[in-house]
Image 1 (cartoon, one colour):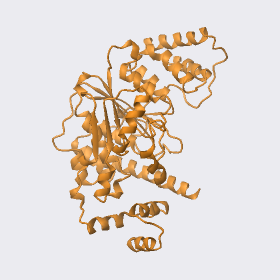
Image 2: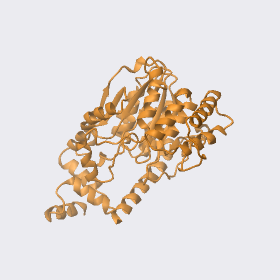
Image 3: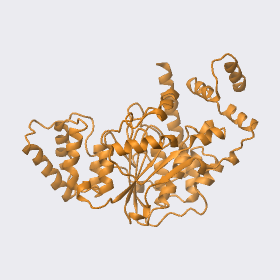
Image 4: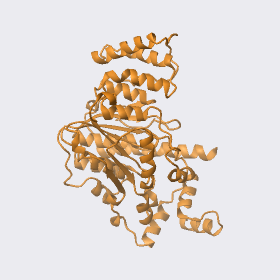
Length: 412
């Protein structure tokens, strides 16, 4: 029936390409997987021919080993670092044609990553202390624009990885254009396996796609909570094909010793539900503003507490956060009895400094967020991980949320 439907739509001029047919099916709640499978067989393209490494377009800009036992940030690009719209094919088509000046940085993202890079104020550090790695599901044609944008943002980075969507098109894998789990897991593992022993990793993404799911699977593996077989089952639960899984998690994969995941931070993007069904929900930090990430990294000692006045100044002067709200955040954070002494002194001194420059008026909560994002649930409380079952439950709930979101948009 789908093949007949494709033929009739093509004949009547309502669609011109298979890509348009797939979009038509998505909008109308149908599946085009049967047709895609048929066309792959028609043109002699099989899933066993698929080489995942051809999809991973990575570039290393500096040796990862120059940071001995240091922190490495692996950061998503679209909707995490850049305000990117990809809710429709039309919006996606515009992305490659945007110049660096057209791209908008998420408020605070560049400042926070720069502080991580240098451990605090760049002027007080003789050399960078951390690696920054961007892993994006966008095509590599955006690399030139990214170079320009990060240069405008005064941000240095260690590597970038893009998804070679042209390979999917050549292989007739239209069904994998929006399925990033296998690709992104491999891209992250390719980075982690090159790090020096003792390094700690921070994973930053958003809730618009599957970042929390992907990062959690990687974390479970790096922390030895699941084995190689367990990671394969995790990907299987997300409907990644066995032939692809074998390329993501090879039998001889080796992770350097004592690699630690210091934190997972997931940005809450407006219009995307963060609600899903998973026992693992809450084992990462969900943030509304990069100011919260900065505070958390100061608590972890990754950003020096002396950078706090500069953070407050940047978020107020450059990003328009009311000073009254920032003062309220500091007062609220100081109520934490477990706050480390160094950060407490920095917060108290910053409050005094704000008053000294004539910033008067009451402190009050003006925005929905505060510095502390609440306690993360420890993975230790989850006594056993059934990788395939846990992944399948989570993946299916995200898929349901995506379908509901598409249906809401189509009714507008």
